[in-house]
Image (cartoon, rainbow over all chains, first blue to last red; front, side):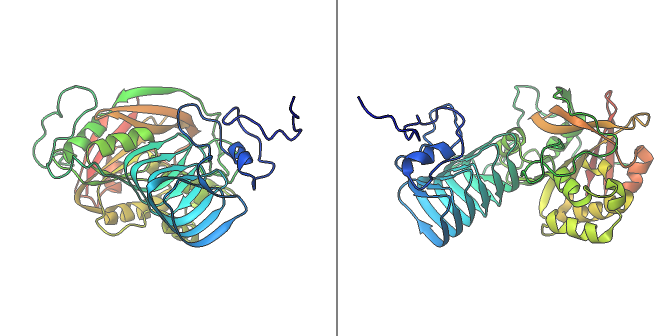
Length: 180
Length: 221
């Protein structure tokens, strides 16, 4: 009924752990550069602008749509209303501001996300992060500071809580541990 | 992290096999940590502090410290140590090479003076020879603000030549999850007196000796 192509352009998205992409210049094949991941995360770059593996950009990028970077970007990236994904081959040497940021590759620079930063297992991130939420998988490499910007929290001092509903900290004299 | 994966992967330092290492084990266990509890007691009633964590980035530690309203700075200190002094030659002898030490300090602890309100050093200090240890403590003293606290662990069983190498994950204010990822020979063993000498430039030191031969130390800058 229809011809089935040998190079199998019709690999289902997120099916299995993908092989290296055969032809990254074609948007359909970009799916294969993204590791398979369960869950509802829409990493498939169907509606993304894409910077492919062989593309290098030096300068400032602004975007109002989601962006998938699998190439090399140096400069600054500003997309406060959209999602940025740095693919496994992506290398970003830039300050980044986005609504949501997913990192599978390498980022050197300060990163700010209004909503969430997701650092995956083989990612490498060096820089300071500011976000409302962060997820970091075991195996990811990160060096830098993390500032969680919670819109409601700030300002009022609060006691150091325990995550379990246990006692509050044992009473300690002011100035705490002393004496050699 | 100190496995035998090929060099170049961001979280797998090269030359990870050193004398006395055995195959990494996947054992993990929780333990109560009086030192950790004391550390967080010292931080109570304040938010917005800057805490240095030598364990490398983990969801557990990041989540816990930021849930207290603090900023966390993550550094995989042992990885940097391995990259700087591992490879050719003896790991501990390489730590006496001042050129390597200078290069090491260009990669780590490059913070302004008085930048941190607390530091979770875990057991990193016991994997340094005296030359490097002294210089590291000088840097730590520099980057901690006055009256800041530092938490460090030292294995206390002198009969053991290779000690478990753990990654330390905070479960709650007084509980740690220890994930063993191999063993390693420490540079030296410290008793209380030796630790007092090591931290002689700090304001005060408090010891907690636990049943699992881990000496916990809270030091006030």
